[in-house]
Length: 413
Image 1 (cartoon, rainbow, N blue to C red):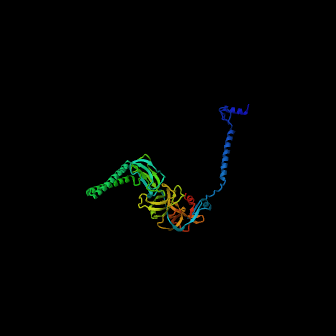
Image 2 (cartoon, rainbow, N blue to C red):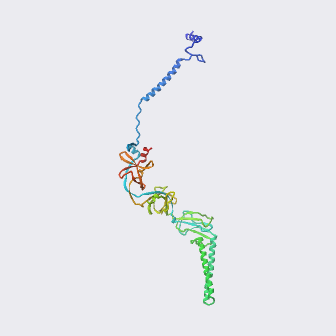
Image 3 (cartoon, helix red, strand yellow):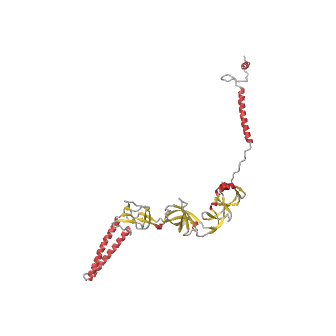
């Protein structure tokens, strides 16, 4: 018999613990060497990980390059040449020069009210014919539409009746005068005939005035009741509010005719700028839809009343639109060359050099190669490209005129 088996059996019989246990299923002993093998493998793996970590920690990381951004050095801000080239930084000297202020505003094109006519129906009736439509060019006296009116027809018929009665009264007066000369009638009868002729003359004049009031002096139709709407001026039909077969009242504006060569813009200008503007100042205009197109106008009127809500008033700009490139209703940018105070000598910097830091106008003034200082300034008038500064910069000092945003964003982010 196997010695190992006998030993196990004797240990089991004696109730003493053995060095091995039996599996519940097979009764075979578990191997201690197997457990040792697993434990050793785990320790080896842990050691390998610890060695790897220790190895990484022991290595020296390569140095990281410092970011190329502006930095504060005492009272100056310094930046590298590479940053200046990358950000497009350019310097422009401040100069002492004359400046005519330019005031900017936005307005809308409209017809000059002195060159617009509203043609009303004048009476009640029925539209029988429309001759002209929107966009048609008309001359003074051109027929726009025809309206049939019973009221006008009655007034015209009354004129015809009174003309006949006046003619008869004139003939009677003539006959009475001849009879008086022949002593066949009395002076009294001649006076009565003269009074009757004068009465019909007055009645006829009143009837004709009524016809004129109903149809206008331009009505030349021979048909009773036919009211012709005629244009009182040369221009373009810009609005039509009637159609054939439409019943109309006497207060309807049937057409609007405008001279499209004469336009104007009404701008709202703040009261603080009104003292800078005078009549006939030059104004540059450009449509919002086509900023590259420029037109020249002149200040024609300056409002006499300031709106208490907006603290502004209307400034009217007249424009010559003979080429027809502008349209009523277009939104435009306006730049008024305000010359009321003449040219003022000021310290001027590019408008692009001015930024805002903490809500205050600020410029970057060059103090050396790659160095600037932050200067708060008090701004004055501007002509768009240049702005006057009352303090903070002296003539001859250079300021950052391009790349301002890049410099500001790196310093104050």
